[in-house]
Figure 1 (cartoon, rainbow, N blue to C red):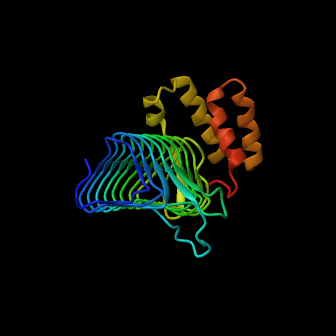
Figure 2: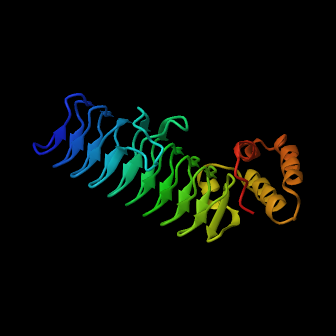
Figure 3: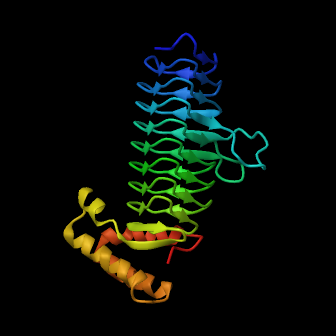
Length: 256
């Protein structure tokens, strides 16, 4: 399961059925769970924990130090969950002492070629990031979000659950849960109705989410007034609560 040309540090912890391809390098503090496949010419370094049944394709750099001049060798980490697909040339960095110190990636994510995940990013589950998506440091991406090719996310931005961003989007403010957006500068373009249907949201819930979107983006209301209206509706429609939770966590302001 370990190719003879691979270099595995004696301190690394690999489950018995981990496969490592030719010329890949695994560092001292790396832990890799059962059933994970590492392709050829990968470098996995740092304090990196990788879960079960992941597929990491060739020429990936996983767990290297942050691209941050403030980094001074602190023992920060990268955590990757289970069943992720990480395609060629992806680059995921460990965290920094200036944040929580851990870059986290959840389960069942699909990262296409050349995705960059910067230090201290927090990525949920079931996301899709197309080729050349770039996350600056400290970015949050919610479950089921889809980011089109070459989308660039500014540091500290939050992307809500079930969001979709078109290819080439330049996102410098938070994108609320359920919202679709595209452009440079990025602009909102409705809610991800089809994605919500596929994930079991009822027609009634989707209709209320659409109404909430119109309150935010079509009625020219001050944000706090729109938020208060949605808070009242959420008492009868709990599907709106993730949107309110997102507003509570937002620090950069939402796209308008």
